[in-house]
Length: 229
Image 1 (cartoon, helix red, strand yellow):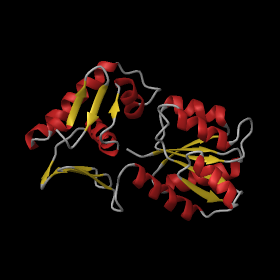
Image 2: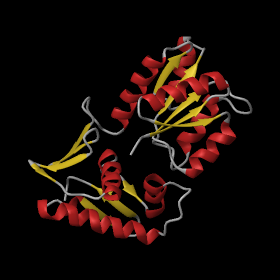
Image 3: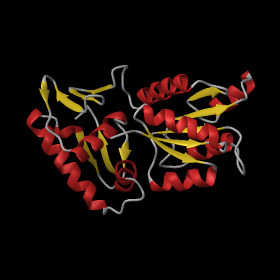
Image 4: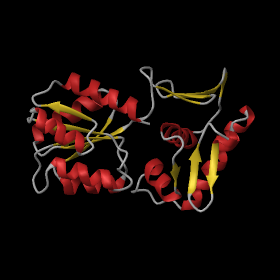
Protein backbone atom coordinates (compact mmCIF):
# COMPACT_ATOMS: atom_id res chain seq x y z
CA UNK A 1 0.00 0.00 0.00
CA UNK A 2 1.45 3.39 -1.02
CA UNK A 3 2.01 5.77 1.87
CA UNK A 4 -0.35 8.76 1.76
CA UNK A 5 1.34 12.17 1.83
CA UNK A 6 -0.87 15.21 2.46
CA UNK A 7 0.50 18.39 0.80
CA UNK A 8 -0.90 21.55 2.43
CA UNK A 9 0.37 24.35 0.18
CA UNK A 10 -1.57 27.35 -1.17
CA UNK A 11 0.72 27.95 -4.18
CA UNK A 12 -0.63 25.69 -6.92
CA UNK A 13 2.69 25.52 -8.82
CA UNK A 14 4.59 24.26 -5.77
CA UNK A 15 1.75 21.93 -4.79
CA UNK A 16 1.68 20.38 -8.26
CA UNK A 17 5.47 20.08 -8.43
CA UNK A 18 5.63 18.30 -5.06
CA UNK A 19 2.71 16.02 -5.94
CA UNK A 20 4.40 15.01 -9.20
CA UNK A 21 7.67 14.23 -7.39
CA UNK A 22 5.86 12.16 -4.76
CA UNK A 23 4.03 10.11 -7.39
CA UNK A 24 7.32 9.44 -9.20
CA UNK A 25 8.64 8.15 -5.88
CA UNK A 26 5.60 5.81 -5.66
CA UNK A 27 4.01 7.79 -2.85
CA UNK A 28 0.33 8.73 -2.88
CA UNK A 29 -0.01 12.55 -3.01
CA UNK A 30 -3.09 14.28 -1.57
CA UNK A 31 -3.16 18.03 -2.38
CA UNK A 32 -4.81 20.65 -0.17
CA UNK A 33 -4.74 24.41 -0.73
CA UNK A 34 -5.57 25.41 2.85
CA UNK A 35 -6.40 24.15 6.34
CA UNK A 36 -10.07 23.54 5.47
CA UNK A 37 -9.16 21.25 2.57
CA UNK A 38 -6.49 19.57 4.70
CA UNK A 39 -8.97 18.80 7.48
CA UNK A 40 -11.42 17.37 4.95
CA UNK A 41 -8.66 15.12 3.55
CA UNK A 42 -7.68 13.94 7.05
CA UNK A 43 -11.33 13.13 7.78
CA UNK A 44 -11.34 10.90 4.67
CA UNK A 45 -8.19 9.01 5.67
CA UNK A 46 -5.33 9.74 8.07
CA UNK A 47 -2.17 10.46 6.04
CA UNK A 48 1.20 8.79 6.63
CA UNK A 49 2.93 12.19 6.61
CA UNK A 50 1.99 15.85 6.18
CA UNK A 51 3.96 18.40 4.13
CA UNK A 52 2.84 21.71 5.61
CA UNK A 53 3.48 25.22 4.28
CA UNK A 54 4.12 27.83 6.98
CA UNK A 55 2.22 30.67 5.27
CA UNK A 56 -1.36 29.59 4.61
CA UNK A 57 -4.57 31.63 4.18
CA UNK A 58 -6.83 31.69 7.24
CA UNK A 59 -4.51 29.85 9.62
CA UNK A 60 -0.73 29.58 9.61
CA UNK A 61 0.92 26.21 9.14
CA UNK A 62 2.55 26.63 12.55
CA UNK A 63 -0.82 27.07 14.26
CA UNK A 64 -2.27 24.14 12.30
CA UNK A 65 0.69 21.95 13.34
CA UNK A 66 -0.04 22.71 17.00
CA UNK A 67 -3.68 21.78 16.47
CA UNK A 68 -2.77 18.50 14.75
CA UNK A 69 -0.50 17.55 17.65
CA UNK A 70 -3.30 18.05 20.19
CA UNK A 71 -5.88 15.77 18.58
CA UNK A 72 -6.28 12.17 17.59
CA UNK A 73 -5.75 10.65 15.11
CA UNK A 74 -3.03 13.10 13.92
CA UNK A 75 -1.05 13.43 17.16
CA UNK A 76 1.59 10.97 15.91
CA UNK A 77 1.52 11.77 12.18
CA UNK A 78 4.94 13.16 11.12
CA UNK A 79 4.99 16.74 9.78
CA UNK A 80 7.57 18.37 7.51
CA UNK A 81 7.29 22.16 7.36
CA UNK A 82 7.84 23.87 4.00
CA UNK A 83 8.79 27.53 4.32
CA UNK A 84 10.90 30.42 3.08
CA UNK A 85 11.60 31.32 6.72
CA UNK A 86 15.05 29.90 7.39
CA UNK A 87 16.05 31.79 10.55
CA UNK A 88 17.07 29.76 13.60
CA UNK A 89 14.23 31.33 15.62
CA UNK A 90 11.68 30.16 13.03
CA UNK A 91 13.17 26.65 12.95
CA UNK A 92 12.94 26.45 16.74
CA UNK A 93 9.31 27.66 16.63
CA UNK A 94 8.49 24.90 14.14
CA UNK A 95 10.18 22.20 16.19
CA UNK A 96 8.45 23.39 19.35
CA UNK A 97 5.12 23.11 17.54
CA UNK A 98 5.83 19.41 16.97
CA UNK A 99 7.23 19.54 13.44
CA UNK A 100 9.54 16.60 12.62
CA UNK A 101 11.63 18.26 9.91
CA UNK A 102 12.02 21.58 8.16
CA UNK A 103 12.66 22.25 4.44
CA UNK A 104 13.50 25.81 3.36
CA UNK A 105 12.24 27.17 0.02
CA UNK A 106 13.45 27.05 -2.65
CA UNK A 107 14.19 23.33 -2.37
CA UNK A 108 14.95 20.54 -4.81
CA UNK A 109 12.31 17.84 -5.09
CA UNK A 110 15.10 15.27 -4.83
CA UNK A 111 16.06 16.58 -1.39
CA UNK A 112 12.42 16.79 -0.34
CA UNK A 113 11.70 13.16 -1.30
CA UNK A 114 14.83 12.05 0.59
CA UNK A 115 13.62 13.94 3.67
CA UNK A 116 10.11 12.46 3.33
CA UNK A 117 11.45 8.90 3.12
CA UNK A 118 13.81 9.44 6.05
CA UNK A 119 11.03 10.81 8.28
CA UNK A 120 8.69 7.97 7.23
CA UNK A 121 11.33 5.41 8.16
CA UNK A 122 11.90 6.99 11.56
CA UNK A 123 8.21 7.39 12.34
CA UNK A 124 7.43 3.82 11.33
CA UNK A 125 10.41 2.34 13.12
CA UNK A 126 11.96 1.23 9.82
CA UNK A 127 15.68 1.04 9.19
CA UNK A 128 17.38 2.18 5.97
CA UNK A 129 16.18 -0.98 4.19
CA UNK A 130 12.55 -0.41 5.17
CA UNK A 131 12.55 -3.17 7.79
CA UNK A 132 10.72 -3.08 11.13
CA UNK A 133 11.64 -5.61 13.79
CA UNK A 134 9.63 -6.29 16.93
CA UNK A 135 10.76 -9.28 18.96
CA UNK A 136 11.07 -12.31 16.67
CA UNK A 137 8.93 -10.69 13.97
CA UNK A 138 10.41 -8.81 11.01
CA UNK A 139 8.39 -6.86 8.42
CA UNK A 140 10.04 -5.80 5.16
CA UNK A 141 7.93 -2.96 3.76
CA UNK A 142 9.83 -2.86 0.45
CA UNK A 143 9.47 -6.59 -0.25
CA UNK A 144 6.01 -6.61 1.39
CA UNK A 145 6.94 -9.74 3.38
CA UNK A 146 6.82 -10.78 7.02
CA UNK A 147 9.17 -13.27 8.66
CA UNK A 148 9.11 -14.97 12.04
CA UNK A 149 12.74 -15.92 12.46
CA UNK A 150 13.70 -17.67 9.21
CA UNK A 151 10.12 -18.59 8.31
CA UNK A 152 7.89 -16.44 6.12
CA UNK A 153 4.47 -15.63 7.56
CA UNK A 154 1.52 -16.20 5.21
CA UNK A 155 -0.65 -13.12 5.66
CA UNK A 156 -3.53 -11.42 3.84
CA UNK A 157 -3.38 -7.79 2.59
CA UNK A 158 -5.58 -6.27 5.31
CA UNK A 159 -3.81 -8.23 8.02
CA UNK A 160 -0.48 -7.02 6.57
CA UNK A 161 -1.59 -3.37 6.83
CA UNK A 162 -2.83 -4.00 10.35
CA UNK A 163 0.43 -5.68 11.36
CA UNK A 164 2.52 -2.91 9.76
CA UNK A 165 0.62 -0.30 11.77
CA UNK A 166 0.90 -2.32 14.98
CA UNK A 167 4.63 -2.94 14.56
CA UNK A 168 5.25 0.75 13.80
CA UNK A 169 3.35 1.68 16.98
CA UNK A 170 4.25 -1.18 19.30
CA UNK A 171 3.28 -1.01 22.99
CA UNK A 172 0.52 1.56 22.38
CA UNK A 173 -3.16 0.77 22.87
CA UNK A 174 -5.54 1.60 20.01
CA UNK A 175 -9.32 1.52 20.17
CA UNK A 176 -11.39 -0.03 17.39
CA UNK A 177 -12.43 3.40 16.01
CA UNK A 178 -8.77 4.49 15.91
CA UNK A 179 -7.77 1.33 14.06
CA UNK A 180 -10.64 1.87 11.60
CA UNK A 181 -9.35 5.41 10.90
CA UNK A 182 -5.73 4.34 10.44
CA UNK A 183 -6.22 1.11 8.48
CA UNK A 184 -9.42 1.65 6.52
CA UNK A 185 -9.70 5.46 6.46
CA UNK A 186 -12.58 7.67 7.53
CA UNK A 187 -14.23 7.63 4.09
CA UNK A 188 -14.95 3.89 4.20
CA UNK A 189 -17.88 2.62 6.23
CA UNK A 190 -16.72 -0.43 8.16
CA UNK A 191 -18.34 -1.76 11.31
CA UNK A 192 -16.19 -1.89 14.44
CA UNK A 193 -16.60 -5.66 14.70
CA UNK A 194 -14.75 -5.92 11.37
CA UNK A 195 -11.62 -4.95 13.32
CA UNK A 196 -12.15 -7.99 15.56
CA UNK A 197 -12.43 -10.25 12.51
CA UNK A 198 -9.08 -9.08 11.11
CA UNK A 199 -7.44 -9.19 14.53
CA UNK A 200 -8.51 -12.84 14.74
CA UNK A 201 -7.11 -13.53 11.25
CA UNK A 202 -3.84 -11.80 12.16
CA UNK A 203 -3.51 -13.97 15.25
CA UNK A 204 -4.22 -17.06 13.14
CA UNK A 205 -1.41 -16.04 10.75
CA UNK A 206 1.01 -15.63 13.66
CA UNK A 207 -0.12 -18.70 15.61
CA UNK A 208 1.91 -21.34 13.67
CA UNK A 209 5.01 -19.34 14.63
CA UNK A 210 4.05 -19.10 18.29
CA UNK A 211 3.54 -15.31 18.10
CA UNK A 212 -0.24 -14.93 18.28
CA UNK A 213 0.04 -13.53 21.83
CA UNK A 214 1.87 -10.45 20.49
CA UNK A 215 -1.58 -9.11 19.52
CA UNK A 216 -3.07 -8.33 22.91
CA UNK A 217 -6.62 -7.43 23.87
CA UNK A 218 -6.80 -4.61 26.41
CA UNK A 219 -10.11 -4.86 28.22
CA UNK A 220 -12.48 -1.92 27.59
CA UNK A 221 -9.76 -0.10 25.60
CA UNK A 222 -8.80 -1.92 22.40
CA UNK A 223 -5.69 -3.71 21.21
CA UNK A 224 -1.95 -3.50 21.80
CA UNK A 225 0.96 -5.06 19.90
CA UNK A 226 3.83 -6.07 22.14
CA UNK A 227 6.90 -8.31 22.20
CA UNK A 228 6.23 -8.79 25.93
CA UNK A 229 3.60 -11.50 26.27
